[in-house]
Length: 416
Image (cartoon, rainbow, N blue to C red; front, side):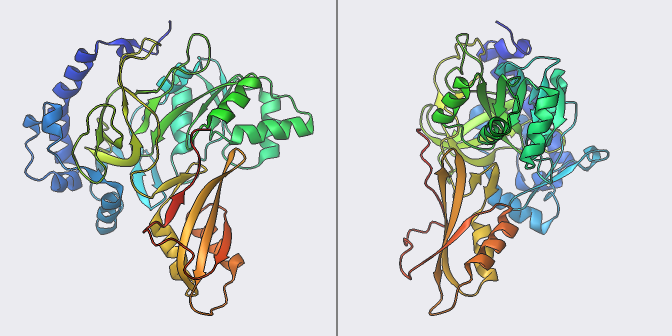
Protein backbone atom coordinates (compact mmCIF):
# COMPACT_ATOMS: atom_id res chain seq x y z
CA UNK A 1 0.00 0.00 0.00
CA UNK A 2 1.47 3.38 -1.04
CA UNK A 3 1.65 6.50 1.11
CA UNK A 4 2.67 10.08 0.42
CA UNK A 5 5.29 9.99 3.21
CA UNK A 6 6.12 8.27 6.49
CA UNK A 7 4.23 10.87 8.54
CA UNK A 8 0.92 9.33 7.48
CA UNK A 9 1.60 6.04 9.24
CA UNK A 10 3.19 7.31 12.46
CA UNK A 11 1.88 5.89 15.72
CA UNK A 12 -0.84 8.19 16.98
CA UNK A 13 0.97 8.92 20.25
CA UNK A 14 4.11 9.90 18.36
CA UNK A 15 2.19 12.36 16.17
CA UNK A 16 0.40 13.87 19.17
CA UNK A 17 3.65 14.30 21.08
CA UNK A 18 5.35 15.94 18.10
CA UNK A 19 2.52 18.43 17.58
CA UNK A 20 2.42 19.61 21.18
CA UNK A 21 6.20 19.65 21.50
CA UNK A 22 6.31 22.07 18.55
CA UNK A 23 3.34 24.22 19.61
CA UNK A 24 4.93 26.39 22.37
CA UNK A 25 7.81 27.59 20.19
CA UNK A 26 5.44 28.20 17.27
CA UNK A 27 3.08 30.22 19.49
CA UNK A 28 5.99 32.24 20.87
CA UNK A 29 7.14 33.19 17.35
CA UNK A 30 3.60 33.83 16.14
CA UNK A 31 2.77 36.18 19.00
CA UNK A 32 5.95 38.11 18.29
CA UNK A 33 5.37 38.35 14.54
CA UNK A 34 1.58 38.84 14.40
CA UNK A 35 0.42 41.68 16.69
CA UNK A 36 -3.26 40.89 16.18
CA UNK A 37 -2.74 37.36 17.46
CA UNK A 38 -0.75 38.77 20.39
CA UNK A 39 -3.68 41.00 21.31
CA UNK A 40 -6.15 38.11 20.92
CA UNK A 41 -4.06 35.82 23.16
CA UNK A 42 -3.00 38.53 25.60
CA UNK A 43 -1.91 37.00 28.90
CA UNK A 44 -1.14 33.60 27.38
CA UNK A 45 2.20 31.99 28.19
CA UNK A 46 3.09 29.89 25.13
CA UNK A 47 5.34 27.65 27.24
CA UNK A 48 2.23 26.38 29.05
CA UNK A 49 0.36 25.25 25.90
CA UNK A 50 1.71 21.71 25.79
CA UNK A 51 -1.47 19.62 25.79
CA UNK A 52 -5.01 19.53 24.45
CA UNK A 53 -6.42 20.59 27.80
CA UNK A 54 -4.11 23.62 27.86
CA UNK A 55 -5.01 24.51 24.27
CA UNK A 56 -8.72 24.26 25.12
CA UNK A 57 -8.30 27.11 27.62
CA UNK A 58 -7.58 29.53 24.77
CA UNK A 59 -10.54 31.30 23.14
CA UNK A 60 -11.94 30.12 19.81
CA UNK A 61 -11.62 32.80 17.14
CA UNK A 62 -14.65 32.74 14.87
CA UNK A 63 -14.75 34.12 11.36
CA UNK A 64 -17.25 36.85 12.26
CA UNK A 65 -14.77 38.08 14.87
CA UNK A 66 -11.87 37.80 12.44
CA UNK A 67 -13.84 39.88 9.89
CA UNK A 68 -14.48 42.55 12.52
CA UNK A 69 -10.80 42.63 13.52
CA UNK A 70 -9.77 42.93 9.87
CA UNK A 71 -12.13 45.88 9.41
CA UNK A 72 -10.44 47.68 12.31
CA UNK A 73 -6.88 46.79 11.24
CA UNK A 74 -6.93 45.99 7.50
CA UNK A 75 -6.22 43.83 5.73
CA UNK A 76 -5.39 40.92 8.08
CA UNK A 77 -6.30 42.25 11.51
CA UNK A 78 -2.67 41.83 12.53
CA UNK A 79 -2.89 38.04 12.21
CA UNK A 80 -0.38 37.73 9.36
CA UNK A 81 3.42 37.81 9.54
CA UNK A 82 4.40 40.77 7.28
CA UNK A 83 7.87 39.29 6.66
CA UNK A 84 6.33 36.43 4.66
CA UNK A 85 4.28 38.57 2.25
CA UNK A 86 7.02 39.68 -0.13
CA UNK A 87 6.75 37.74 -3.39
CA UNK A 88 3.51 36.11 -2.25
CA UNK A 89 -0.22 36.57 -2.88
CA UNK A 90 -3.24 37.99 -1.07
CA UNK A 91 -6.73 36.51 -1.50
CA UNK A 92 -10.22 37.76 -0.71
CA UNK A 93 -12.89 35.29 0.36
CA UNK A 94 -16.58 36.16 0.76
CA UNK A 95 -17.34 38.16 3.87
CA UNK A 96 -14.92 39.63 2.98
CA UNK A 97 -12.04 37.88 4.72
CA UNK A 98 -8.49 38.57 3.58
CA UNK A 99 -5.92 35.76 3.55
CA UNK A 100 -2.21 35.73 2.71
CA UNK A 101 -0.66 32.82 0.87
CA UNK A 102 1.56 30.61 3.01
CA UNK A 103 5.15 29.71 2.28
CA UNK A 104 6.71 26.74 0.51
CA UNK A 105 5.97 24.66 -2.57
CA UNK A 106 2.65 23.34 -1.19
CA UNK A 107 1.48 25.97 1.31
CA UNK A 108 -2.02 24.47 1.64
CA UNK A 109 -0.83 20.83 2.03
CA UNK A 110 -2.86 19.56 -0.92
CA UNK A 111 -0.39 17.14 -2.53
CA UNK A 112 -1.21 14.57 0.13
CA UNK A 113 -4.91 14.65 -0.83
CA UNK A 114 -4.10 14.17 -4.51
CA UNK A 115 -1.89 11.19 -3.69
CA UNK A 116 -4.56 9.58 -1.48
CA UNK A 117 -7.08 10.01 -4.32
CA UNK A 118 -4.78 8.07 -6.67
CA UNK A 119 -2.98 10.85 -8.55
CA UNK A 120 0.69 10.26 -9.30
CA UNK A 121 3.64 12.23 -10.72
CA UNK A 122 3.26 12.72 -14.45
CA UNK A 123 -0.54 12.90 -14.40
CA UNK A 124 -2.21 15.82 -16.16
CA UNK A 125 -4.72 17.58 -13.89
CA UNK A 126 -7.61 19.60 -15.29
CA UNK A 127 -8.09 22.22 -12.54
CA UNK A 128 -11.54 23.79 -12.78
CA UNK A 129 -11.37 25.71 -9.51
CA UNK A 130 -11.47 29.51 -9.65
CA UNK A 131 -8.18 31.36 -9.73
CA UNK A 132 -9.88 34.74 -9.33
CA UNK A 133 -9.65 36.51 -5.93
CA UNK A 134 -10.18 33.37 -3.84
CA UNK A 135 -7.41 30.79 -3.26
CA UNK A 136 -9.30 27.69 -4.41
CA UNK A 137 -7.57 27.32 -7.77
CA UNK A 138 -4.16 27.90 -6.26
CA UNK A 139 -4.72 25.40 -3.42
CA UNK A 140 -5.25 22.55 -5.89
CA UNK A 141 -2.74 23.91 -8.42
CA UNK A 142 0.13 24.04 -5.94
CA UNK A 143 -0.74 20.64 -4.49
CA UNK A 144 -0.86 18.90 -7.86
CA UNK A 145 2.40 20.45 -9.04
CA UNK A 146 4.12 19.67 -5.72
CA UNK A 147 3.19 16.03 -6.35
CA UNK A 148 4.76 16.21 -9.81
CA UNK A 149 1.60 16.54 -11.87
CA UNK A 150 1.12 18.86 -14.82
CA UNK A 151 -1.76 21.31 -14.36
CA UNK A 152 -4.09 22.86 -16.92
CA UNK A 153 -5.35 26.02 -15.21
CA UNK A 154 -8.89 25.83 -16.55
CA UNK A 155 -10.61 27.99 -13.95
CA UNK A 156 -14.39 28.32 -13.94
CA UNK A 157 -16.92 28.75 -16.75
CA UNK A 158 -16.23 28.55 -20.50
CA UNK A 159 -17.58 25.01 -20.55
CA UNK A 160 -17.17 24.40 -24.26
CA UNK A 161 -13.57 25.68 -24.25
CA UNK A 162 -12.80 23.49 -21.23
CA UNK A 163 -14.21 20.42 -23.00
CA UNK A 164 -12.16 21.22 -26.11
CA UNK A 165 -9.01 21.59 -24.00
CA UNK A 166 -9.60 18.34 -22.11
CA UNK A 167 -10.20 16.47 -25.36
CA UNK A 168 -6.78 17.60 -26.58
CA UNK A 169 -4.75 17.40 -23.35
CA UNK A 170 -6.36 14.13 -22.17
CA UNK A 171 -6.05 14.74 -18.41
CA UNK A 172 -6.23 11.74 -16.10
CA UNK A 173 -7.38 13.80 -13.11
CA UNK A 174 -10.18 16.34 -12.68
CA UNK A 175 -10.03 18.89 -9.85
CA UNK A 176 -12.95 21.20 -9.14
CA UNK A 177 -16.36 21.37 -7.55
CA UNK A 178 -18.30 18.09 -7.46
CA UNK A 179 -21.03 19.04 -9.92
CA UNK A 180 -18.97 20.77 -12.61
CA UNK A 181 -17.38 17.52 -13.73
CA UNK A 182 -20.86 16.31 -14.72
CA UNK A 183 -21.36 19.53 -16.69
CA UNK A 184 -18.14 18.85 -18.60
CA UNK A 185 -18.95 15.19 -19.24
CA UNK A 186 -22.49 15.96 -20.41
CA UNK A 187 -21.28 18.73 -22.71
CA UNK A 188 -18.64 16.39 -24.14
CA UNK A 189 -21.30 13.76 -24.85
CA UNK A 190 -23.49 16.33 -26.61
CA UNK A 191 -20.62 17.55 -28.78
CA UNK A 192 -19.06 14.17 -29.49
CA UNK A 193 -15.83 14.95 -27.65
CA UNK A 194 -13.89 12.18 -25.90
CA UNK A 195 -13.14 12.79 -22.20
CA UNK A 196 -12.56 9.12 -21.37
CA UNK A 197 -8.99 9.97 -20.29
CA UNK A 198 -10.40 11.28 -16.98
CA UNK A 199 -10.19 8.43 -14.48
CA UNK A 200 -9.89 10.27 -11.15
CA UNK A 201 -11.43 13.30 -9.52
CA UNK A 202 -10.45 15.30 -6.44
CA UNK A 203 -13.32 17.60 -5.57
CA UNK A 204 -14.08 20.18 -2.91
CA UNK A 205 -16.11 23.34 -2.42
CA UNK A 206 -19.42 21.51 -2.08
CA UNK A 207 -21.02 18.22 -1.12
CA UNK A 208 -20.27 15.13 -3.20
CA UNK A 209 -23.69 13.51 -2.98
CA UNK A 210 -23.73 9.69 -3.05
CA UNK A 211 -25.88 9.66 -6.19
CA UNK A 212 -23.37 11.85 -8.02
CA UNK A 213 -20.38 9.80 -6.87
CA UNK A 214 -22.18 6.68 -8.08
CA UNK A 215 -22.89 8.25 -11.46
CA UNK A 216 -19.23 9.13 -11.89
CA UNK A 217 -18.20 5.60 -10.99
CA UNK A 218 -20.63 4.23 -13.58
CA UNK A 219 -18.84 6.45 -16.10
CA UNK A 220 -15.46 4.99 -15.12
CA UNK A 221 -14.28 7.81 -12.85
CA UNK A 222 -13.38 7.41 -9.18
CA UNK A 223 -14.12 10.72 -7.45
CA UNK A 224 -12.86 11.48 -3.95
CA UNK A 225 -13.24 14.65 -1.96
CA UNK A 226 -11.18 16.83 0.33
CA UNK A 227 -12.34 19.33 2.91
CA UNK A 228 -10.45 22.61 2.57
CA UNK A 229 -10.67 26.21 3.73
CA UNK A 230 -8.87 29.35 2.62
CA UNK A 231 -7.13 29.72 5.98
CA UNK A 232 -5.76 26.18 6.27
CA UNK A 233 -5.92 24.62 2.84
CA UNK A 234 -6.73 20.91 3.00
CA UNK A 235 -7.95 20.01 6.49
CA UNK A 236 -9.00 16.44 5.71
CA UNK A 237 -9.26 14.17 2.70
CA UNK A 238 -10.63 10.84 1.51
CA UNK A 239 -8.38 7.94 0.52
CA UNK A 240 -8.85 5.25 -2.09
CA UNK A 241 -10.04 1.87 -0.85
CA UNK A 242 -8.23 -1.20 -2.28
CA UNK A 243 -11.44 -2.39 -3.91
CA UNK A 244 -12.16 1.07 -5.35
CA UNK A 245 -14.15 3.99 -4.02
CA UNK A 246 -13.36 5.82 -0.81
CA UNK A 247 -12.56 4.54 2.65
CA UNK A 248 -14.97 5.70 5.39
CA UNK A 249 -14.60 9.22 6.73
CA UNK A 250 -11.98 11.84 5.94
CA UNK A 251 -8.41 11.68 7.25
CA UNK A 252 -7.01 14.72 9.05
CA UNK A 253 -4.08 16.30 7.27
CA UNK A 254 -0.67 16.37 8.94
CA UNK A 255 0.63 19.43 10.83
CA UNK A 256 -2.82 20.43 12.06
CA UNK A 257 -4.47 20.16 15.47
CA UNK A 258 -8.17 19.39 15.19
CA UNK A 259 -10.77 20.00 17.88
CA UNK A 260 -14.54 19.54 17.71
CA UNK A 261 -16.22 22.07 19.99
CA UNK A 262 -19.77 22.75 21.04
CA UNK A 263 -21.08 25.43 18.63
CA UNK A 264 -20.92 28.92 20.09
CA UNK A 265 -18.46 27.86 22.82
CA UNK A 266 -14.77 27.02 23.19
CA UNK A 267 -15.51 23.67 24.86
CA UNK A 268 -14.45 20.44 23.11
CA UNK A 269 -17.15 17.78 22.84
CA UNK A 270 -16.64 14.04 23.40
CA UNK A 271 -15.42 12.02 20.41
CA UNK A 272 -18.32 11.10 18.17
CA UNK A 273 -20.46 14.08 19.11
CA UNK A 274 -21.22 16.57 16.35
CA UNK A 275 -19.73 20.01 16.85
CA UNK A 276 -17.84 22.83 15.17
CA UNK A 277 -14.49 22.10 13.52
CA UNK A 278 -11.75 24.17 15.17
CA UNK A 279 -8.21 24.11 13.78
CA UNK A 280 -4.79 25.21 14.98
CA UNK A 281 -2.15 25.25 12.26
CA UNK A 282 1.60 25.77 12.09
CA UNK A 283 1.45 28.29 9.23
CA UNK A 284 4.24 30.83 9.81
CA UNK A 285 2.63 33.31 7.38
CA UNK A 286 -0.87 33.18 8.87
CA UNK A 287 -0.74 31.68 12.37
CA UNK A 288 -4.30 30.71 13.18
CA UNK A 289 -4.81 29.37 16.71
CA UNK A 290 -8.15 27.74 17.48
CA UNK A 291 -9.94 29.21 14.48
CA UNK A 292 -13.55 28.10 14.27
CA UNK A 293 -14.36 27.12 10.71
CA UNK A 294 -18.13 27.32 11.21
CA UNK A 295 -18.40 23.79 9.78
CA UNK A 296 -19.95 20.87 11.65
CA UNK A 297 -18.40 17.41 11.87
CA UNK A 298 -17.56 14.67 14.36
CA UNK A 299 -14.61 12.41 15.12
CA UNK A 300 -14.97 9.00 13.52
CA UNK A 301 -13.53 6.37 15.88
CA UNK A 302 -10.92 3.87 14.79
CA UNK A 303 -8.22 3.89 12.17
CA UNK A 304 -8.70 4.14 8.42
CA UNK A 305 -8.47 0.77 6.64
CA UNK A 306 -6.09 2.42 4.16
CA UNK A 307 -3.36 2.34 6.84
CA UNK A 308 -3.14 6.06 7.57
CA UNK A 309 -3.16 6.64 11.30
CA UNK A 310 -4.32 10.23 11.78
CA UNK A 311 -7.73 11.10 13.18
CA UNK A 312 -10.76 10.81 10.93
CA UNK A 313 -13.81 13.02 10.77
CA UNK A 314 -17.20 12.08 9.37
CA UNK A 315 -16.88 14.76 6.73
CA UNK A 316 -18.77 18.00 6.31
CA UNK A 317 -22.07 17.82 8.21
CA UNK A 318 -23.45 21.33 7.77
CA UNK A 319 -22.80 24.75 9.25
CA UNK A 320 -22.59 25.78 12.88
CA UNK A 321 -23.72 29.22 11.72
CA UNK A 322 -25.80 30.25 8.71
CA UNK A 323 -22.78 30.97 6.51
CA UNK A 324 -23.36 28.47 3.71
CA UNK A 325 -21.21 27.17 0.85
CA UNK A 326 -22.98 27.29 -2.52
CA UNK A 327 -21.24 26.25 -5.74
CA UNK A 328 -17.92 26.42 -3.91
CA UNK A 329 -18.48 29.95 -2.53
CA UNK A 330 -19.60 30.97 0.95
CA UNK A 331 -22.68 33.15 1.28
CA UNK A 332 -22.95 35.01 4.58
CA UNK A 333 -26.16 36.39 6.18
CA UNK A 334 -24.46 39.81 6.08
CA UNK A 335 -24.49 39.62 2.29
CA UNK A 336 -28.24 39.01 2.22
CA UNK A 337 -28.66 41.97 4.58
CA UNK A 338 -26.63 44.05 2.11
CA UNK A 339 -28.98 43.06 -0.73
CA UNK A 340 -31.96 44.18 1.37
CA UNK A 341 -30.19 47.43 2.31
CA UNK A 342 -29.79 48.32 -1.37
CA UNK A 343 -33.52 47.80 -2.02
CA UNK A 344 -35.76 49.77 0.32
CA UNK A 345 -38.79 47.86 -0.99
CA UNK A 346 -37.55 44.69 0.76
CA UNK A 347 -39.05 44.22 4.21
CA UNK A 348 -37.63 40.74 4.85
CA UNK A 349 -35.50 38.34 2.84
CA UNK A 350 -34.49 34.71 3.18
CA UNK A 351 -32.09 32.78 0.94
CA UNK A 352 -33.14 29.19 0.25
CA UNK A 353 -30.46 26.75 -0.91
CA UNK A 354 -31.64 23.58 -2.64
CA UNK A 355 -30.53 21.02 -5.20
CA UNK A 356 -31.48 21.30 -8.86
CA UNK A 357 -30.58 17.83 -10.08
CA UNK A 358 -26.94 17.48 -9.08
CA UNK A 359 -26.25 21.21 -8.86
CA UNK A 360 -26.68 23.82 -6.15
CA UNK A 361 -29.44 26.37 -6.66
CA UNK A 362 -30.45 29.38 -4.58
CA UNK A 363 -33.65 31.38 -4.36
CA UNK A 364 -34.05 34.67 -2.52
CA UNK A 365 -37.55 34.89 -1.10
CA UNK A 366 -38.59 38.48 -0.48
CA UNK A 367 -41.43 40.14 1.42
CA UNK A 368 -42.22 43.65 0.23
CA UNK A 369 -42.50 46.80 2.35
CA UNK A 370 -46.19 47.72 2.37
CA UNK A 371 -47.54 48.10 -1.15
CA UNK A 372 -44.13 48.93 -2.63
CA UNK A 373 -43.45 47.70 -6.15
CA UNK A 374 -40.72 45.08 -6.27
CA UNK A 375 -38.37 44.67 -9.24
CA UNK A 376 -37.27 41.05 -8.98
CA UNK A 377 -34.80 41.37 -11.87
CA UNK A 378 -33.05 44.30 -10.20
CA UNK A 379 -32.87 42.39 -6.91
CA UNK A 380 -31.46 39.34 -8.73
CA UNK A 381 -28.77 41.55 -10.26
CA UNK A 382 -27.86 42.87 -6.82
CA UNK A 383 -27.81 39.34 -5.43
CA UNK A 384 -25.29 38.35 -8.09
CA UNK A 385 -23.23 41.49 -7.49
CA UNK A 386 -23.02 40.92 -3.74
CA UNK A 387 -22.60 37.12 -3.61
CA UNK A 388 -20.93 36.58 -7.02
CA UNK A 389 -23.50 33.81 -7.60
CA UNK A 390 -26.64 33.71 -9.70
CA UNK A 391 -30.00 32.98 -8.11
CA UNK A 392 -33.74 33.39 -8.55
CA UNK A 393 -35.82 35.97 -6.70
CA UNK A 394 -39.28 34.98 -5.53
CA UNK A 395 -41.73 37.56 -4.17
CA UNK A 396 -43.87 36.13 -1.36
CA UNK A 397 -46.80 37.52 0.63
CA UNK A 398 -46.13 39.49 3.80
CA UNK A 399 -45.91 37.18 6.81
CA UNK A 400 -44.98 34.15 4.70
CA UNK A 401 -41.33 33.88 5.77
CA UNK A 402 -40.87 31.97 9.06
CA UNK A 403 -40.02 34.05 12.11
CA UNK A 404 -37.13 31.80 13.17
CA UNK A 405 -34.13 34.08 12.78
CA UNK A 406 -32.85 32.31 9.67
CA UNK A 407 -31.52 34.43 6.84
CA UNK A 408 -29.87 31.56 4.93
CA UNK A 409 -31.70 28.24 4.94
CA UNK A 410 -29.82 25.22 3.58
CA UNK A 411 -32.48 22.74 2.46
CA UNK A 412 -30.23 20.36 0.51
CA UNK A 413 -30.59 16.68 1.34
CA UNK A 414 -27.06 15.41 2.04
CA UNK A 415 -28.11 11.78 2.38
CA UNK A 416 -28.78 11.23 -1.37
